[in-house]
Image 1 (cartoon, rainbow, N blue to C red):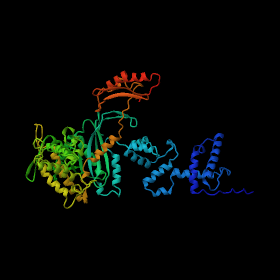
Image 2: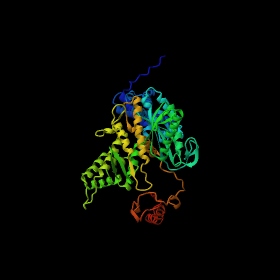
Image 3: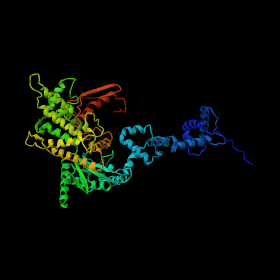
Image 4: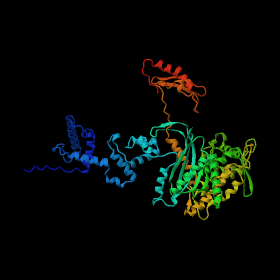
Length: 630
């Protein structure tokens, strides 16, 4: 006997599917319950009846039932919709940008899942790590609205990368793979090596993942019992493209010694050459150890050339068949000129004419300009730029705004008109034109060695890309600047003052290096290059990111209710802020206010809290227990 054929219901259209998903998700926890007892089955049947009623009341088309021998047509459609949601099988997403498409599929795949049930592949974690490194705070905010891996998941991902002090073999192995790919052109292999140090807060902490105590001096070769307070970082940066990569680091006490810098330099160059990279130049600041290491490398290159009977140059380093041009960071060189000019006058020669520049001319011009009211010739100058005791000597922008064309023009204008004070004394004499010429000279020189990326070149042609063939404004500036800097002498005011400090020699070495770089890149097929690539901005940015992402909160264990005991409070004054009044306020209004004379330390704070504030709080709220203090 043939069984009766079950009547087939109409297919769900797209609008019905969408409506069904919206309705059924409200009962998802019930219909997906894995329990098989009578109570659970009864709850499921009631849930399906409720889904059918709500669906039929909103669809307005074909009437659907939850029965029909439980043919589960609604359930099948729901499972299909969940399959689309969880696996991201939506063709419309494939037409989007790959990054946007992956992010949308990530959201659809994990919708409705609990945190412990979400699944992320490696690409999802790498994308999330990119977002987190842009801004941890923004990432935590996004995690409240989107499905994203937790911060601990990202940290576990990073812990899987084997990074240790000294040269990282893992990084260079990946660089070698990228260099050998077809997309990596010969010009993209040209890079610059920069190294710099950053001070650290000495600290020891136990790493449960590595099962060791970290914080000691460690350069990858030896680990001592001294607490490290500095880290040396080595970074490779492309000259042709925008990639940059830290490749080595080491922890040290005080400062890395010159022999250690030389050894690390050779290790990095050797690994870079083995990876197929072409290191054109190296850049560092004028630290005593860095300058000494550069001199050691130059002397060693000269000795090797003489030993082999080869021609040598005093401004080129050779290591492992690689020719590297040493440079000093131009922003640091300019700041050092400024720092010397503050304490000593500068004598220099231009076109056979001897001139003397003085910092006092800049200070006088600033006071004249401020007195002119709103119509200032040097609007950017403030006391932080010109007053020696208030200058922020570490900020490059403060220095470059002084050594600028606008300041030079203002001083020159005041010097020509010979400004006088109310009592007839000369404030700015014609000698100020020498200082104006020095400022304009260094403004043009700095533009020639720091231009080419992200600058508006209108009216500042030296900020353009440097051409490697034919006429070049930058090369003309370098040729003209070298004899001028060679003629510079600081007029000593003390016996310890140096007439020709190292910064002048380093400027000349750097300008010779830029000339060699221009010739070498011309031979490699470059038509032009950005001079700003050859500075330490990449290292400074990495240091800023490290300081931004490090956890500045130190965890302290102590017994409960002992926070304000004297032995848990530092009595030294660490803040520059001055406490004026200390008091408390509650829902009943303000309490006592205590005036603080001078600066308050930890001992005074404990005494005021115990003797004045807490008795006042307990006296007003004696019947309220417990009392919460924030």
